Amino acid sequence: MRISGSTAPPAGIAAGALGDLAGQRAAFDRAAAVHRERGTGQIPMLHHEQMGMSLVESHQYDAGWPMLTEALERARAAELPLIEFDLLSDFGRGWSLRGDHYQAREQFEQALEIATRFPGENLEAKARDRLGRTLLALGRPEEARTHWQRAVVLYRQVADPAADEVQDQLDGLAARS
Image 1: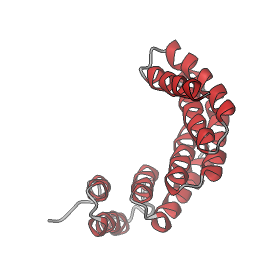
Image 2 (image 1 turned 60 degrees about the horizontal axis):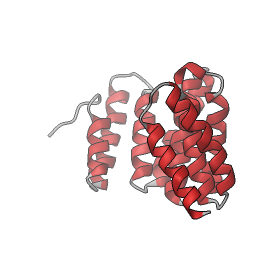
Image 3 (image 1 turned 45 degrees about the vertical axis):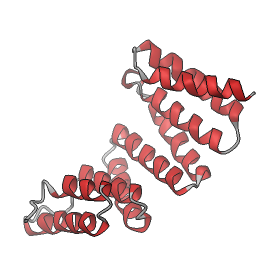
Image 4 (image 1 turned 120 degrees about the vertical axis):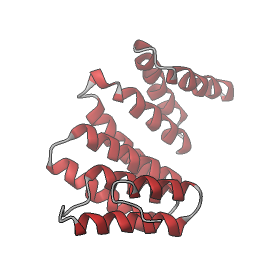
């Protein structure tokens, strides 16, 4: 089956989710080839993000990090802070998956810095939730609690059901104390 350039990233993501790492890489390589054939030059930033994160989630870090890094550099150069937020969050999730919670914390802190500039997007709650999880993994429950408490408030302001999940994290933390 021939995969077009526009469907290659979703096909690669699906293959990775199914554990077909060779199929995943083949689909992503096909996407890059199609963009070269069409003379479009660079792979679109969104595809870079999707492909990079899919590879990282499949524990193919050496292949995924460069794609995420390129997408992040392009987002910064184009002054696209909301995409930068997403990419920093992706990096944080990736470092967490790899077990490097110190690196994850750095990425989530940078994402939080961006999030606070865009209060209408409710990104701050997401960043604080992720940062809280990372801080707990680092053995810093009081700092996690502080971020989660703020996340719950922010989630509840917009009736986001994620508030209940974060509240459960807080309740579990209180039960351990």
